[in-house]
Length: 463
Image (cartoon, rainbow, N blue to C red; front, side):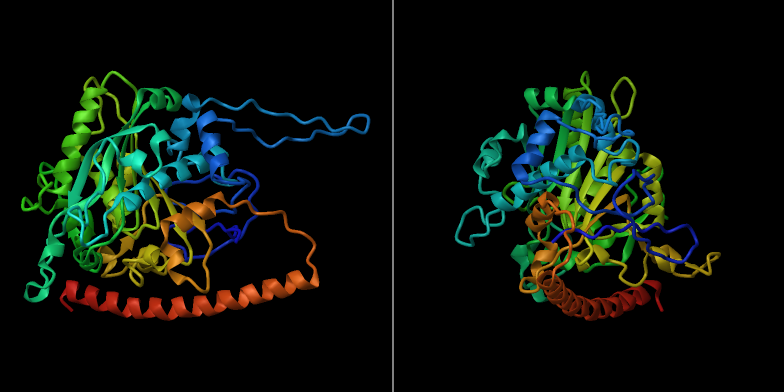
C-alpha cells in the first residue's frame, strides 16, 4: 500500500492541526517539524542499495517552454556521496530531502534498517542452545552469516544490557541477566572511501526478554544526569530505558559492566584510532533499540565524546525505526542544542510510536497557547524529524511494528493514480472498510493505554 502524503506542522502554543500536501516542491523542515510524505519510485531493495553504492542521484527533468514543438530536459549532474553525506545525515535537518524523498536518503535509511535487522537474524531464540538470548555467531562472522557480507563494516564489539527490574517472588530471574542487544561496527577502508568518511555504527535490536518488556512499561520520567559536572535535573527520560542503558550486571558470561560503559569505551577507542580521518557516528535501532540509540547519542554529545582530539565536532545521527518517545521537552531541546540529529521512521498505525505519553505528550503541556499546565514537566516529547509511513494488514496486525515491514514499505514503488474503474472503486471501498475496522481496534487499545499511563503519571506526581 502506498504511503499517504501528509504534512503536520505544530506551531508553538497553537492547537494541533494537520495539513495534507502533494509530495512535490522541497519544503523547509526543522528538527521540530514532523514530516510525512509519499514515497517516490524505487522498484526493489537491490535498486535502493545500488543507488547508495553508486550515488546515481538524478533530479527530475525540468521542461522549459517548447521550441519547435520539442521540450528540452535540463538535468543536474548527480553529486558524489562524499559531497552529500552531511546533508543525508541531517546537517541541515534534511531540508529539501524528504519532500519528495531523495533517492540517496531513501537508500541510506534502508541500508541502516538492514544493519539493524541483522541483530534479529543473528539473535539466538533457541532455548536449547548454549547461546540462548545471545548472538549465534562470532564478531568476525556475524554479518556474513546473516547474508550481509558486502555491507562494508567490521563488527568490533558486541553490546549486552539488562534493566534493573524487580520481578515478583524471583520469577523469571534468569531473564534479568544481561543479554546481547546489539553491536558496534566500523566502516572498512573500501566503504570509508565510498562513503567519504569513516562511519562508526552502533545497531540495537528491539524488545525480546521479559525484563525488557517490564522496562518498557516503567514510564515514569527520571533525570538522566549523564554529565556529573552539570547534571541538568530538568532533562528527564523514561526510567525503564535509562535502567536498561545504565544498569551494571557482571554475572553474565559475556558482560563487562553496563551497556553505557561498554558503548562509551568502545566508541572513544574507535574515535581515537581514526582521529586523523573524517568520522561520523551513526546510531540505529528498532523499537526499544531506537530509545537506546537516542540515549547514547545524547550521552556522547553531553560528555563531548564526539570531538576530535585536536578540535572539531564529529556529527551524531540517529536513525530510529518504530521508536517510542524517550524523554521530556527539556530532553528534546537539549538534544537539539547539542546537535544530535534524529530521523524517525514511523508507521502511523504503529501504537508503539505513540508511547509513552499516549495522553500526556507535546500537545498537553500548554493551555490556550500561553498557560503552562502543572504536569508539563512530566510530558513526553518526540525528538527529531519524522518520516511517516502508512501501512497495515488486517490479517496480521503485528506487521505494523515489524522492522522488515518498515523496510519493505520504504522499497515499495507507488504507481501513478490511474483513472478509477468500477472494480478499482470497489477494491478501494473494501480496503477502506478494513482500514476503519483496524483503526477502531487500535483506537480502543490506545484509550486503554491512556488510562494506564494517566494512572502512572498520577502516581509519579503523588496525586
